[in-house]
Image (cartoon, rainbow, N blue to C red):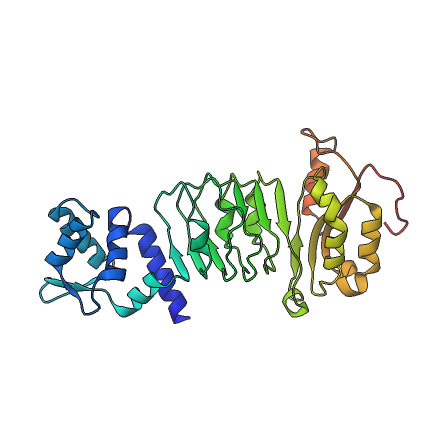
Length: 316
């Protein structure tokens, strides 16, 4: 827990207090500065020699900024600086990738993801991330305030378990691919992603991981062919969620509703809050359903909308 708090603190500082040239200077200190410390003048000259900065005055200012941000510590009347061991360990640890607040247009290369346990990419200008990064250890990914991001692929990140609520700020996101991850719930803020056209998730894993899921809301375009092709398997998985108390789902066929109902002993459909839309239909720009009816449907804790289909169940 202590390490996690320290990592988050360093990430915040790197994202808000350090940018541009100072960021490269911090990395130089982490990888090349002696652990016992270094003369400030020699350090600045090394930065100039490695083309990290252009002038000595620039180096003086950066050293002052890094000391103020607690990334460096000064001693001997400010003539020497060092990096504390715990800060050094965080910055050189390949399990933590800090690229927040840099205004980047391109995401880190695929190889940078392989060992990462936690990745900070907030406050950048990405339009998309790598389609198939190999990140088997990734557990936490920070992406807030990337307003241009349209596609987020996290497929196959087997240890990925959590999306932060701030994912709701990715307003232009159209594709969210979480297939093959161990994520067990989506934050409510995903509902703010109004441009989302494709969501892929897996509800697989050990029963102990799955049984804790209490709320599941899946909102899809009724014209989505991949959803219609895979919905039967998803319904089968939903029926195994014995702690589920809230469910929202679109079912293109009445038979799928019947399957849910027949499995109510395990999924407890009769006692949960639900909102079902059943029947094949086209999504229209202007709905034929009166707005007051639509609003009432959204406000109900238990509601079923049945459209354009045949074979209405007597139980309904």
